[in-house]
Image (cartoon, rainbow over all chains, first blue to last red):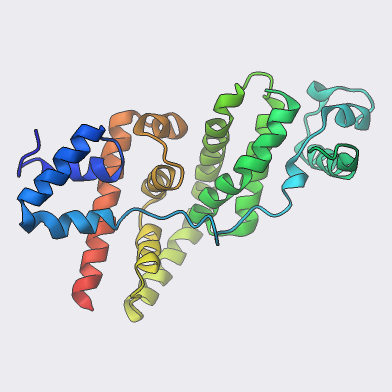
Length: 107
Length: 161
């Protein structure tokens, strides 16, 4: 039950999208019944950080992260995946994956 | 998870993890290192990781890696925050998105991470708890505090304009 004593938590749960549809409607109705809290409510709604997916930064060179197990095993002289312990070596292997990607156009 | 599923993870999640880490570290090179390490770990442990949980796995590894990095560079970080404080008070920003960015940068790394995991990725309190190692109640309390700090910053600035 949302009241003037506990409304802040309901507002925050609403902003965090942690309420059921029914509870969301209750919060919206509560704001309608208590216009003096509308400003506070709207300020909280503004505090959601919008993802800047469209113009945001991207990880350049994703193909460098890709792996191709068969080539990796060949590339380290048949030692197998488990035999590799040095991270820099894996980045070289990722590079091998990149050059061989032509052989896997679907990827 | 299979090799194919791993490579799909790269395509689908590399940008998400990178944006999340970059918002906290602010240095592109450092953020790239963290992302690369996270994918390296996923590759090494791919036989134990369920493909359906690969995204949370990546965020979990990257989050802890980032916290380690921030702890190591804490002193530098504090100096940067002090500089920003001065800059913002000199030149108030009017655009809501920019104001929120500034407000976000003033939160501590845990609060900022929780807000980003919630708003960028839409994770639930429970999922955020699994990623960060906090329990669900802590996530809720810290996130609510962070949200109120963002709101107070916004309101304070509106009153100044």
